[in-house]
Image (cartoon, rainbow, N blue to C red; front, side):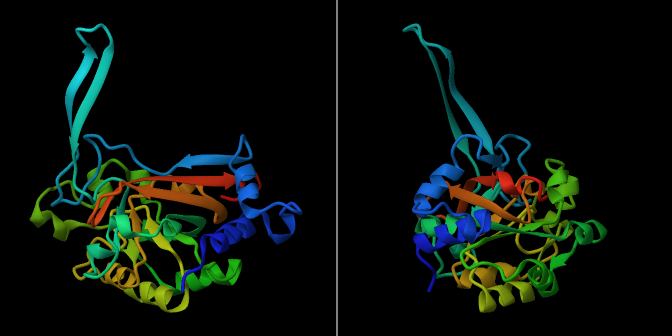
Length: 283
């Protein structure tokens, strides 16, 4: 059973302040209000903007913005309105569990408690730089734990590969600038190894997994086993996450709210990181 929002809040506070630092007599909500107020924390935008440069899967429909109105009206006031069309899976976005699991949560069914929580960042950027097909392993997860302790229940696990430095160059980011079905075989970028995904769902209770590449599975995947393993347990994914290089290894807090598409398999994601002052040097 996943923990209540109160337990998540307590876990966030423990990561952010340490249990001995919580002000006596204050409730967790009061402390979070203090944490998020004024200059007590740094706020990080972890989403890319949607425009003509936004990267999508080679077979997905790219973002299109149609200007309906932009200018002065006959009544003498300024008015702007647009229409937009986009695939669910492109730019910084959510993968809902139904994306690869028939009975998984659709976008609007994901409990809100799984969309915010303490962030844990695992840095595999050196290995990924040496091998664009690198897959985050069980050893990577266990090595992080050997230094920092077990992955906290209710945390959001973020995999930092360094791929964000390549955005928005599609050829460097995807491994190819080609479009269409034939381009899928040319994809090269890091992801999560299926064995590591299985280890996570069998041994830990993270609420979501995010990565700074186009997919939780690496570019050459044909079976998307990491997706299937996570989504069978209703663990959603955040893909094309921006600014992971700005988050500390632990101590930050993430809020990741997708467009609420009824029946959706995913959708555009506005994601932010909140870094308490005490952790702003731990990068």
